[in-house]
Length: 356
Image (cartoon, rainbow, N blue to C red; front, side, top):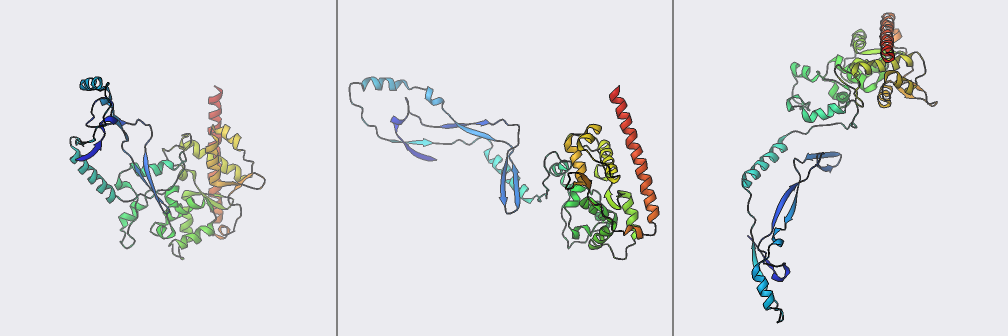
């Protein structure tokens, strides 16, 4: 119970013995959040509901009829200063307030027990931004979390860890983290991070990530050929790995088939030393500039003359000393011949549909 002193003359008309407030919902199409920064970390807490408390001023419209008689009797006499009186202000508890408070305490306790979710910042609309958002939506059992390094990881747990390796996940892993993965997954992680890499450099990185120095080069190349293509003597990850099945592009929702064809077409132009015109390629594939730019950045870079060139053009000659080098070249040449034929067929069919 709170007691406060009020002057009667300060209120219009009759005596006010209480003041009430009403809550009003604030309509919004966005989600409000409270952010707290500490060092290099950012903590976000979503607000489920936002309301505004406004005073209820219905008492202004109520006039005490006794005051009218008082005013008429006081017209001929001087107004006397009235003494201040104490008024009672009682705030009535809402029904179920205690239960709501208990629920709130339980919710806060539960949230405090939940583990942190490590996220990478990806601008909205980029190809992998959806995967970062899914970390909030997917159940906890499907989320990837860090394990205690002192706990022995079983074979089954290793297989679960190796299930989903993509460009976003590969950037989250350090060299020590990569050591727990299989040889095939190690190669895929390094290909995602390097974009384009020579055979010798890839093998050196694999040794730093826990692959034994006596590991057979033939075994490494067998896995490498399954997930990468050879361009100017260097390896780049296949478009099928970069754009998995049943996915769409980040900016304008192009299908994974179109994105694969677009990327392989650009790689073919760069590999054959042809001029790459970003606007012309966008018109051929009906792809917006943002999509074409993302593909170019995965395999190429602008040189001093503002021309697109492959990320890596030097050949260290390591692959040429491998025993089955000629066989690898024939396999890659056959693969590219077949792929270019598929791209040309697709473009011809697309042209016929547009002309109809």
